[in-house]
Length: 265
Image 1 (cartoon, rainbow, N blue to C red):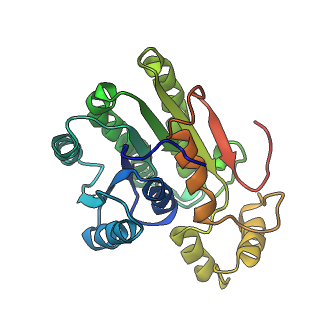
Image 2 (tube, rainbow, N blue to C red; image 1 turned 120 degrees about the horizontal axis):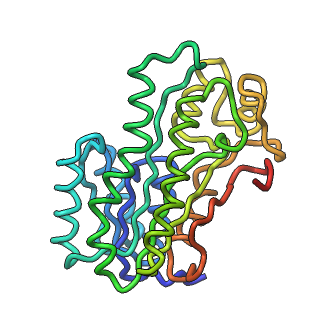
């Protein structure tokens, strides 16, 4: 399907690896110009080369720590200068770590969860809005998590931060509807991301096997999917690309589960 992304401009924050990169590849395959924002230059450079090799006309990686307001603004200033002050798509794919039960989490871990998982998104949207408002059409897609609907005692800070992302996104969809800027949320379930595969290795499980990974999630977290395996990052990318595309012309304020089956909340 042609998503109408040819020559569109897209920024994927957290696009250097995992689900963010999977989404970036979908944009590149459809002819969009893509900027990846993240903290690690080597990772971004490798990801940008991957997009260039796929035919992306203007792939680049830009280093910024989203906890630094000035650094985020500098990146979007650079993007505005490169793309004539306009931006069609902003995807926020960064998520906090903060694994641990409530009794074990420190104040600093709670602060980090909200700064990484919520305020980073807020800073990026705030800096991107002038560019999005100038474009002929614009979309925002933020990553939440299905754990906001199916709680785990090992993820209270992570889940609270993701719930805040969902709430803020809903508010943004209301704020930006008069501008016809659509704002939606994707809530991945148990996806074989680098972090989850690394966790699996720490408990003696081959995270490269999505069936073994789902069995471990069931054992340690108690919320398996209806499907017997974990998802793959490449299964998230097309959903993000559709929500961020011109093909999506009327869906806003929605929270889309991509979780292998859980519930309809």
